[in-house]
Image (cartoon, rainbow, N blue to C red; front, side):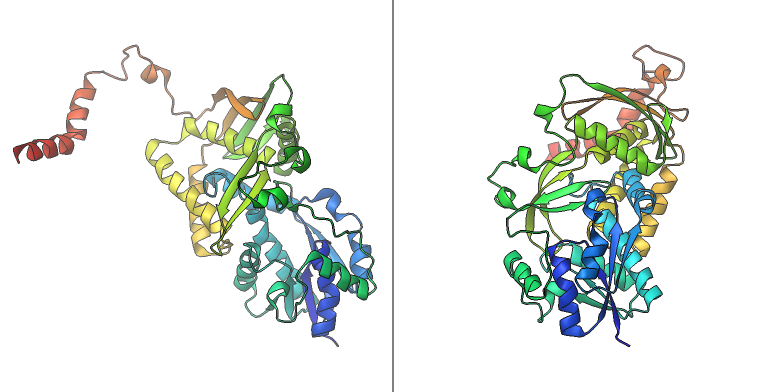
Length: 402
């Protein structure tokens, strides 16, 4: 019997061409695995296409709920943002895809896993670190890095498929390179390759509109959270995946969550992309608005560092590591009392506070008020300032003696 290879299959041109390439160059039985992270219509017609291209079977694995609950929510709780802008849409999904590829490889008795990520990007790192962490014995084939891979353009891939009798629903026309899941959609290529160019939003946007084209009327939204996890929108209880879907609709409508960034890839180069994360942007902001009431100063300070660290860990594909587990354990502890209600207005790309409440709020109106009360004596501040600034005063005195 032939050895089996599991191919991470999207149905796009690259992975379509890889099916006959694997059979021709390695004589493998090719088992395609498409991981459904919320790509929606992108999954239409995949099984027929995979089989017609030479795969022995296709798995379509729905992991949307697992993605939302076990990978997205830890990042939301941490407020993990890469380089202060990127909400990790692609990064969050890759370790879960690697996990499911390994599970199916074990089930099928496959000796290798193949992916179509290029040698310039981050995804090759994320896929392969995940596979190495979970199945160090399984061989990894990165088609674009193989000496046997000679297809260096979209046109050459189309011609290769034609030579192998594969009819494609693709053309050689240039288009954006996109990655979509329930959390976001990313756009790279075309005018975005030159940072001097403005994005062509009329051509580019998929999940919503630009702020200029958003409604003139704002929209009030109320959300509830329990231990850092969203539980309802406008009074309707929903699971996390449905909350994200609903927030995507609301955010897209009002031009929320469009980010144009030049980021630093793990491999050392800079890349420019536009990310649409309408629901995720709202969820991050709503969670943070609630958290402001509840966390003390020292915990907030350390949590900022841990959020940045989790963003880096996730971006670099190091999800299945003791460090990620330890950081998430800290984050989960901070979320013990992040319960309450957040109200905000969506208006032309903005998320505007409309009021926040929590039974665990540390905000005390009697203390915060400018009116003197029993809980705070203004005179107490004098001794505190003297001690808090003692080193500053001593240094100034010493320097003045020189």
